[in-house]
Amino acid sequence: MIHKTLIIAEAGVNHNGDINLAKQLIDEAAFAGADVVKFQTFSASRQVTQTAKKADYQIQTTGDTESQYEMLRRLELSSAMHLNLIEHCQKRNIGFLSTGFDIESVDLLLSFGLELFKIPSGEITNLPYLRHIGQLGKKVILSTGMSTLGDIESAIDVLEHAGTHRKNFTLLHCTTEYPTPMCEVNLRAMQSMQAAFNANVGYSDHSEGIEVSIAAVALGASVIEKHFTVDRNLQGPDHKASLEPCQLKAMVDAIRNIEIALGDGVKRLTTSEIKNKSMARKSLVARCAIKAGEEFSVKNTTTKRPGTGISPMRWSEVMGEIARRNFMVDEMIEL
Picture 1 (tube, rainbow, N blue to C red):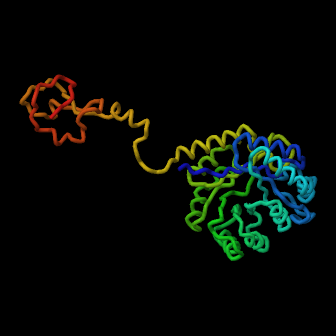
Picture 2 (cartoon, rainbow, N blue to C red):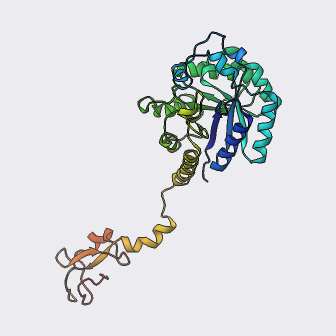
């Protein structure tokens, strides 16, 4: 049975506050074959102070003439916009997901019927927020950027004590830098988390390109989350670190191929190998002309294709046996 990776196309705030652009992102995610398109649900007034500075990568992509609060205000999605996007996702047959960055936003998403809740890396130490999500008893995807195993363990404990069973967790390894340098990806940390917490794991990919996400699937990721945009040249904090539509489709196609290639782990002859087996393997054949009554030996016997005669694995058994008839050069040995 082929394990199917949940591929989350992270639209995030790449809609720039424009509902039509948000719908276009949904269209592109659906065309690429992603399972889910994810947005971000927040209120700037509940998310940051009005004087909070931007991260370095945000300054590089949007300048430093406005505060983080002002930037986020422009990127909010209203309740009506959420409902519009959910409806559009249904039309395009793709799942809708959004990260709620505060308790009120989580409750808004709950009112829309969401059964899966994504906890962003920045909230992994937000105790009241974690408790609130934990008591919902829903499926949870927890991003772990900027975290140690100790931070993750503490968050898991809060969620479990609040009422969410560990079987409902998926832990996403990620590095909170946009884009993430390859030297800081540390993809094996995903496997370390799986071993430490006996939980499903995945990867939230902020690196450039698609190869790290593909490698993560090969290493056991059950979820892949990747930012995308319709145009990396658009104004906004996350466009530069996002895939464009053709790249997103290439990533999805590659992951689906990897899922097939991973197989079930049973070592067996494949259908294709069965028809090639006799042509690729060898048999015992006469190295030179052999007369009836001669012993088979290293001087008159060798191995050559095809493998339709006596297997070379019986070499020791055949050596010293007497030829019962004459054999011509290259003729298969018979006992």
